[in-house]
Length: 115
Image 1 (cartoon, rainbow, N blue to C red):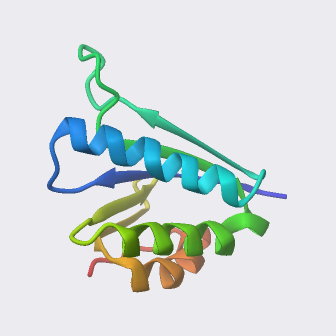
Image 2 (cartoon, rainbow, N blue to C red):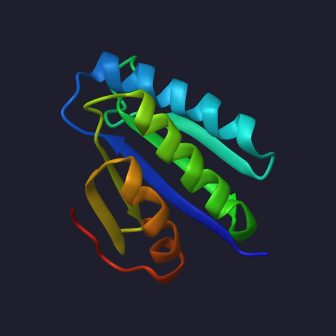
């Protein structure tokens, strides 16, 4: 089974808020399936805060479940917006809950989407 790796950035939030949301979304995703690894990461190695990034690695079989998990998380966070990127090939910005599932298939293909 092929692993898919992508990064989620929380848009238009402070570092502290992005850090909090990254931990919260990580906890949500790792509860959905054991086939996902999610870790908050720094955007600046010189800061203590992890920042507004979440790196996610999952198998293709978990992609739809994780997409639904991100969709549900966004529904609980009114006003939240994420940027999702995969190795520079896929970049989706301004994502809201209803758009995440459609993006799940594009993650496998490496296409560009912007809402």
